[in-house]
Image (cartoon, rainbow, N blue to C red; front, side, top):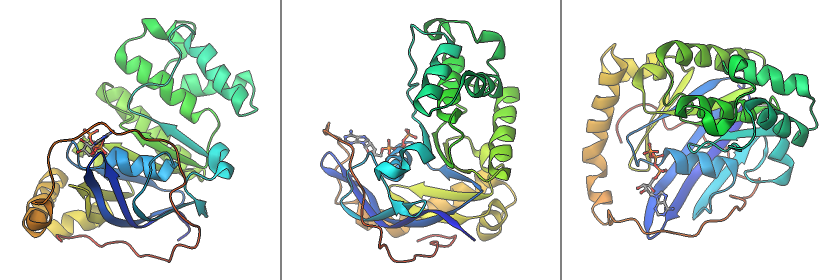
Amino acid sequence: METAIEVDDLVVRRGKRRVLHGISCVVPRGSVTGLLGPSGSGKTTLLRAVVGVQIVGGGTVTVLGQPAGSPALRHRLGYLTQAPSVYPDLTVRENARYFARLYGLGAPDADRAVVDVGLGTAATQLVGTLSGGQRSRASLACALVGRPELLILDEPTVGQDPVLRAELWDMFHSMAARGSTLLVSSHVMDEAARCDRLLLIREGRLIADDSPTAVRAAAGTDDLEEAFLRLIKASAGSTASAGSTESTASTGSTESAGSTGNPESSTRTSEGTGAR
Ligand SMILES: Nc1ncnc2c1ncn2[C@@H]1O[C@H](COP(=O)(O)OP(=O)(O)OP(=O)(O)O)[C@@H](O)[C@H]1O
């Protein structure tokens, strides 16, 4: 298995709180890996560390063989944030073509990305006039346009109807079949079943890192949502004492882009499925 992302003992503080507590995991190349967990569990923080825009307090994150945040990774990685990052005063097509130009690509690449996200018929519409779900797909088109080796997608299917969600997941798998690696966060448990691998995070700790089949087997149920609930409950006891020292109040923190570690991170295996 070739590795796209290797996270080793990652610790992150945001504001005054520790929000990731020594996370270690490996994301294989050419796979669709789902990052799931309750709201506030640290999914976005972990994705930000992989992209290299999160100051980290310890551990290492290695992406496509380089330290996360390395300038050399910029053109190899696409990042979709939860807040759509598109220009409202440009049309969908103009936004995609603008991002294509940044990657040194042409209009056909941009137009294909617009069609891929189901916005072909809205290509000439101003982004500012799109619905919320359409706006996030416009943002997704801009993240996809460069056909990056690694795509980090933070809740890409929020606000989409079931048909579009299914089409987007089909597209993610086609991209993985062509060799891209996708790390996709989601709240939606039925989407977990569509992933090749699952990372389940709770209160900044990884509680499962396995295939959907293995997660179901470890939890003793065929229902993935129930499996997650069982794993979350099982892990709650084991981390209760560690969590008790942490304040629940969050304070605003100033964050800037930064590299997340050195390239000589030691090889780590996955955490394994199950409660800790
Ligand atoms: N800028 C910040 N300053 C301080 N604390 C923050 C900041 N951003 C996030 N946090 C806290 O860090 C923790 C993890 O947040 P994160 O956004 O990574 O969670 P998440 O799992 O992505 O949540 P959601 O699913 O709701 O998007 C939360 O407790 C959150 O309140």
